[in-house]
Amino acid sequence: MKQTIFLFGEAEKGAFCTPILCQSLPQMVDILGHPPGESRGVYYGVQTLLYKREVLFFRVKEEGFSKEDYLRGLKWLQKGHACDSLSAICMPGVGDAELIDTSSTVCQLYKSCLIIDEKDLYDYLTCKVVH
Image (cartoon, rainbow, N blue to C red; front, top):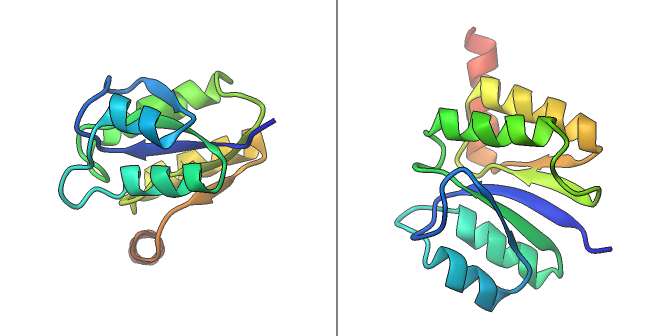
C-alpha cells in the first residue's frame, strides 16, 4: 500500500476545497496545471510523487491565507475520510497557530506527521511566545 500525503496548496486549475488524488506527475499536471507565483504546494506534490507516494491535493484559494479553506480540509480529515495510509499532512506557507494546532490533532488521529517549512515553524513559535 502506497503512503499518501494530504497536501494543501494553490494550483492553476482543479476544484477548490475538494481532495484530489494524484498518483503520477502527468496526472497532476493535467488536473492541477502549473503552480501560481510563489506557491509551494504543487512543488511539494511533485517531490512527493518522485518519492513514490500518492498525493491528496486540497486546492485552496490563497496558500497560507485562506484560513476557511484550510479548516474545511482539516474538518474533512477529522471525519475520517482519508485513507488508512495517510502518512503526513503538508501545509506550506501556513504559520497560523490555530491551523497548526488543529492539524496536529488530525495528525494524531491518523498517526501521521505534519510537514511545514522553516519560516512557517518560526512564525508559529514566535506567535505562541507573543500570545
